[in-house]
Length: 286
Image 1 (tube, helix red, strand yellow):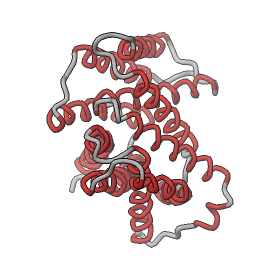
Image 2: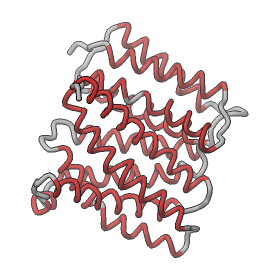
Image 3: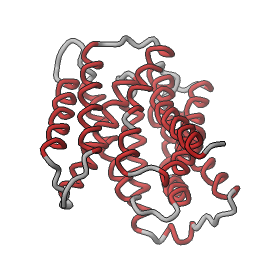
Image 4: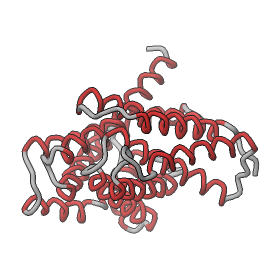
């Protein structure tokens, strides 16, 4: 297969996998097929199992002894766990597209804000893009008839902040797949505790199936595909292409979940994705 075509295929598959996490969560949680605690636990356990299989199949060392003594690994595992818990709880009230938009907007705002704190100095065009994106985000969450549930939106912001921290901690990783596997494995003890919520929360076999699919396929395999594509993308490209995830999730929510498309969501999506794309694409000064 041509190298360029292979890269496009990898990117598309990874973005679909990322969007699938939102759709699967909404299927399980919005339909009350599973509670958020148990969903989080099963998802992380399935993701850890799949990542271990992927690492072993490549003949790589799991490196768990070194991981246990690494402060970065423990911080990353904590950020992963908080992201997964807040993500699941948020989808009790949010639609797939709205949740994905809030999540990825928060991630991008946080990473761009960290870059500013570390000394990046965006030009006028990049600042304009950020202002437009921020205006779109504010418009999305402002109270009104079609505004998303405020508690759900706040929880998804927490999920986005946690995922941004997780991403920043992983920058410069020499073996991202192994590191991701270690993060999932270190998050296993609290994840297994979360599965005890099966005793008190509503659950069904189909809900467990959605959680396993999210953890093993959309997360485990999805991350592996993304890491295969990432070395061939620039920082700007990797940031911009991820902005397609909320749009994919929104379309899937409409087609598969019967969610209602709203003008507010459409305008907010255009403002946030367009503004962030401009801010990422313009190289900052230091």
